Image 1 (cartoon, rainbow, N blue to C red):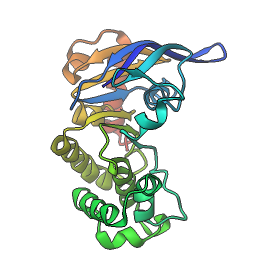
Image 2 (image 1 turned 90 degrees about the vertical axis):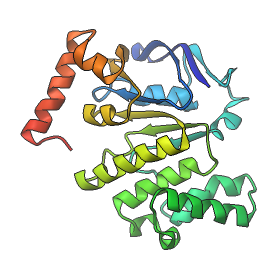
Image 3 (image 1 turned 180 degrees about the horizontal axis):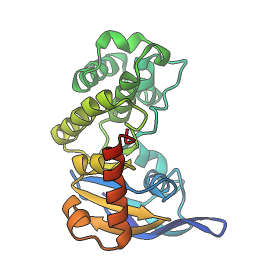
Image 4 (image 1 turned 45 degrees about the vertical axis):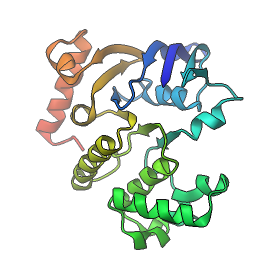
Length: 248
């Protein structure tokens, strides 16, 4: 469905992402993890065409992403950005339904889909008429997820969707998100810097450092069969943060 072939991105002489080969399995949740500045968001940007590779190519459903194909491809991708990225002048329902309205969906189809998504994400239907400033952080993230799901996309791309939430809300949303992924059978790519969150969601994990893939595999592979000393250091640093209470 989505394949990267030696796709890379540089900014000047700096390699934001070294050449990478990657193929997403349908119905599979891939988690991309690593420290800040390692290339996680760049990799996600290559997948949805927001970032153009300066080497290699990205293919969606066998077709290379290009200015001629990206519009149709994006309508089959759901994208959840950090902090929700909601338009403050639109209601929650207006944010969710924006692209459907642009595509000319009839009002009854939009309203039916909004109600369906509100039930799926445990969002109160009366909240659809509220503006983002009138919603909690967790509710805003649910709106962002509903917006990504509105067109029933083939792939969901999520860029640290829970990073700014307090621990209790984050815990609840983690469980709800995993249930949604499983019930819908979507192909998912989730970016995080939190190893415990990666282990919770992932069918497989890619660990990045300085734009390069250090290791890919299951949670057990990274913890029990590290490919590089950095893998062990990264996991141990995560454990230390939980032990001293500095983790989110």
